Length: 133
Image (tube, rainbow, N blue to C red; front, side, top):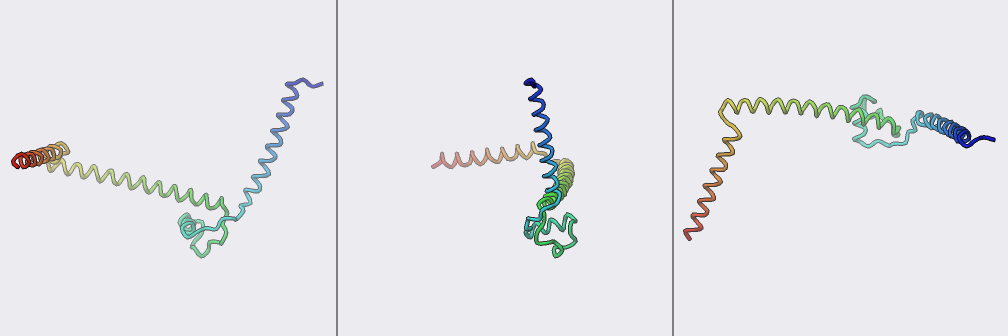
């Protein structure tokens, strides 16, 4: 008779074999690319921008979900790269602007002191006007 550890090991191997057979069968179904997604106008533009199709008129009525997901990923990556580039350009512009302001003698400290002086003068004027009534 089989001992308990041997029986568990045998059942584990059998279960593992069943799982691998199922996963192989399901990947074959997924690789066929079931065309069940109807793209809207924006998704059609994405398909053209990603280079999958030359024009919107070439896009079929039904597109596979896998194809749409790959297209969305390409567009997402392109948009992230554009945002990175715009951020670098914006940072460079801010550095240039700050250096120009420093040449003119402007600083955040001076602006802050001027604002506080104006605020204190306005508060003193309103106190004087209220005290005089």
